[in-house]
Image 1 (tube, one colour):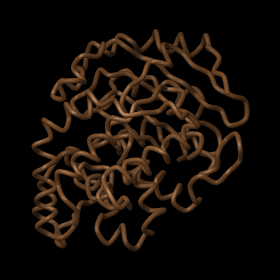
Image 2 (tube, one colour):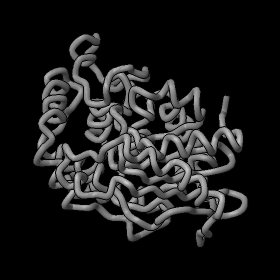
Image 3 (cartoon, one colour):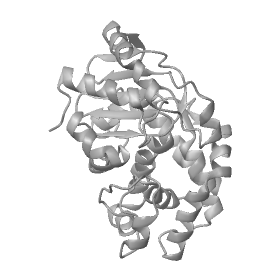
Image 4 (cartoon, one colour):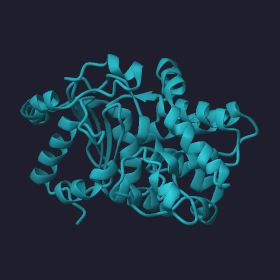
Length: 309
């Protein structure tokens, strides 16, 4: 499917671009510190009428935490709900996404949900495969199918940069290994997880993946069921309750749709039954969400009554 530029979306982008000055790029990951903080783009995949875009919607960015939704879907398909949620909880948290404190205070000592780093690491550890490369290939193939784009790949420069600096994530892994949540080798898990986070795509790919979730797991073009309906529902529920880090409650009030952000500046949005949304705006607020991207979604939600509530 081709994507058409939209004058109104361009106007909305122009109206919120100045918010980029109030954030900063995620330079604690060295490779992410090289991007232009003023970038802002959007693609909207309407399941009935096609795709609209504004900005440089074909500029690629890494998924980072947006990938947590996709790995969760795969693992739920692999392992089933009982297996997954015996090891990872379902509750939102007001703590930062990389916090270790709840692991220390929770009994049993398992991550509160799959959208924080500890939970996402535990989920990635559950990906089935006989080797690191087999597990990686299964995840990447699944994401390529969701985006209907065989050119989706990993940005190995970003993956290596994250692998070399992921001290806190390693600490989370060792803590969970001690308590039996993580079963596999930690360095192999870190390799797989940093590749997962460094999967690279553009706003159109992300919007198309959003359309799959909007259609309860169905491919918007072929009609094929890519994700079982119940698993798509679970993923969207986590996106509502936990998808925007510790700003998820505020986002639910202001925008009111399932969404997942990443520290690259990507946002995956879903308007059930209607739209998939992909946004890229790498200037982040203090919680790790795209500053201008959030403002753009607020304007769209108010104008078109997106809220599921």
